[in-house]
View 1 (cartoon, one colour):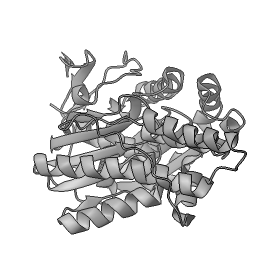
View 2 (tube, helix red, strand yellow):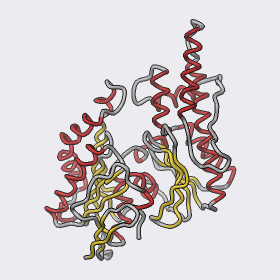
View 3 (cartoon, one colour):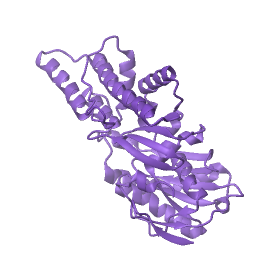
Length: 360
């Protein structure tokens, strides 16, 4: 077993030979934000158990995730969720091949709860530990239900991330575009709050936009001609401006038309930049992943455009779009196959580099 220092992330990894002749059962833990999740996945593809405990009810009263509250809730539930995942799988702890955990990015307090639990299990069971990148998990959620082909482009859209990722070959990532301000899910929640919807607001805006008969036209932030980056703060400000103007006139805002205008602006930019990246990088597939992948309007628009352009579109089922541990196990399997394990002195990495996490 050899200890190596990753030149990109500075994170040490242990390289060893994994036994790939027998089935691999990875128990994965995900606590990067406000879901406590534990899963057991066989051979990186077959979900044996995937338990998710949401904190939405707790954070709704605050209008968003409170980091300290989230980490305390993880502490309260993590042991029970691990027990439930093992019980549901029908396996024993002796059947496990490795322990995986989200190392980052995420809220540092929340990450630490999962990491401590994963380290304890790995040490007690004498199993390899695999620190896993959260976004790699979202991308490889698709591998749980689809056959991925390379090279491909992934559009990651969630509450904390909006990124375009070029995946040259299995487990090798290159970030080609990212948000410069608000992530798309964050923008949805802020607009939903302005429209007086509860947290999380994205599904409410999506539903209202689908019901609208009219549209209030809003700007699109295309940025520089060749850029794959995103910016949604100006769009959010434009929505607030329309609402404030209606209030000054003593009129109620046209909520449905405004929701539709906001969603159309977001979708236009996401779809156009994604398809431009697919063509520029000669990608064989486009992957949609992250919590916003559950958005009906985005899924429909990307599906129609990909069908017209004859580009295969891969989207996970709704239950695998949000944060869950099965996706972490799927990504960790890439490392397990190559014997690239993580030492027990692993630290939480709130700003973890996706490119640095790439397989060797």
